[in-house]
Length: 441
Image: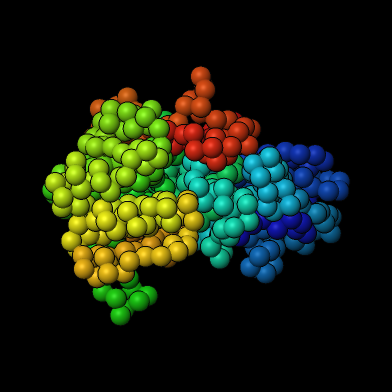
């Protein structure tokens, strides 16, 4: 990802009056709509290739700048300053929710295979809290601005982008940068926003359903960069009639995983949560949990063995909790069971584990974070998701087999991004049922 250079020298002819704008103050560029300011006096010609994006691109490529009538002696030299965009930033680069604020950063520019998207809404995830606290750095080369999922409208495309056009409405996944007015992403990391979804509903999809999908199905992904591997196998390998256990069921990812398991015809889906309100909700939703357990008052492994599976155990287990659930997870799994560890909310260190259970049951345990996956992996996952799942998703009140559920913090369903501190505190308090979304005004 590249950003606009802050100052660019260029020449301009006052005599070129056919297309000229007074550049004594802030004005929108007629081509790229960016706000620009020319320091000096004279006229700034804003048209054709003289758009500031073209000028800065030529400057980066170290190509000479040319204007018509170069033989003219009546030239000016300007300093061009490109105005920045707004983004959610963290004071001192790390801190509590109160350290979040909306500040200014430079607007990103799309490279050849990338698109620039004007963000309409973005989703909150646990990783955002960890990154805000300084515990979870973004992948190398990614934006340091928080946020990995968004919905919005394309405002510019790279020279090698073939599928997308300016004005297309999309939703997508990124390594970072979604808490901002604009974001640059590879053209393969977005999909078309279904027309029946709102911006907020669309923003609730990428990380929830793609992360949930990692624990739910087996895509055949050939990785060109690693020829020793003929395919990357995702963890869950769910089959019809499998029994499934999903922890943190009322989270956005948990709800998505439950619905995906039902969509792929799981026999039973047991979900855990901490309150009766959350458990009632998980049983009531479309394609919701067939069984539930309150992990604070019940031994969920006993519920799975005695009430849900008749002593067999679950074939697929999706866990976000880690330490406190680990031993019971092993007890809950069936022979040849598969467990996917997506997070460790209770801690990453398990003091003692009976490895004999893993050997005796032939268990497979795999950790996975979508953010750390390669661009090739993410692109293939997104492509399969678009083929198999996207058309079945609707809003909470829609008729689809899979629905997006947005957390209602108050009478206003959606947090404005000006209340990003409150949105983070809501997630930290584990108060949400469904996805927390913020909309950009």
